[in-house]
Length: 500
Image 1: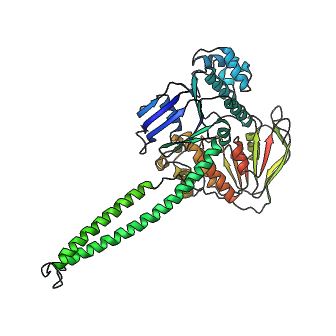
Image 2 (image 1 turned 180 degrees about the vertical axis):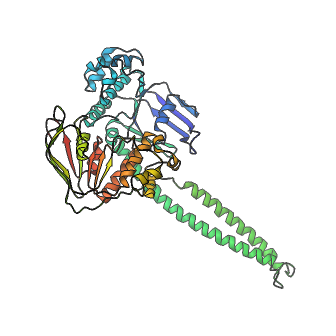
């Protein structure tokens, strides 16, 4: 058994006012399956880079591990996959094939160019390479990107068989299934929890509730101390005036004072000032105990009530090119209903949306139609054409600019980013703009295509809460099974063999 020891770790980027980590201390057992979670921008990937010694920091990180990072860098994706993996070091091929079989992936992919593999296949071969060498300690950053529900289950079962790794993922169910400890980045602190994500969530809720109660008590006590201090200070000032006297009132000042009032007032003032100073010290001490609790700010969503009962309806509907993408579908979305759609990559989920919006270029049979005259608010997978300043963007799309900004701020976008052209933002920031656009669009029907990409767990909870609150009519495509089950009123799985 060995440890990763972090002592007095302090780190921040020059471009940011706030430190990411401040005097952090931690001991991690290298046998743990550790889930690393926290809001976007709080330093999850940065912490992995610090472990890899890629960034300068103050403090110390001591270990005897050979850290390896996922995803591995691929210099030439036109090479055969085997050669791509060999660039990171030699290994015995049979060991790699064993790992691929555990991941439910045919080893024949090794003889295909890496670029021809699907996103899920690429993820699996890169993960397999990490675990070929038993002395490696994998740092796994967002392995569920590009994975459909089935592939996520394969990877989860695979990691359940392993020990000694750190994984970053925003998929709560995935993290729940694969970790036995959680390391949460809370503001600039590293907080360790024993157990999986469900245990962490319960303990975090209990801790936040307790700290909120303590904060409330402290604020009341601070308020009482401030009031008492103000009263004592005012009394002291009154005695000071008595001692000095009024220049306009005969007999009120020191010139006419016999000395008795002055001496008594001086002693009383000294005691009073000492009391005020003591109370100010208590206020400072109490204020230091206040916890900086991380709140999940509620989002604003603007669903419209339609006079139509059925907003979207499909009968014996099927799409395809040379071959059908899925079996014929029959479904309807009524007021306040939310249809969650699941399916493997390539099963036709996004094609279904394209057909609803009139942009599908393949073959279709049966019928699918939206109610006449309704407005649809759409979150796209691909939103690279969003550009310009946010003011122009809001005007172009007929959005309430203040609503757009408020939702962006609540989704974690820094105010400084508001003055950045959208095309110069990071992909995560641009995703939040796309989502905030949909939230600010008054609509009878919301269609969201994989809305959780780039969103952290806190953002996911925000979406769950606003959907439960306003009950919009929705069609949602998402690989995150937990989220889909939380927000949907009914589920539909697309397969070519059957439709459940």
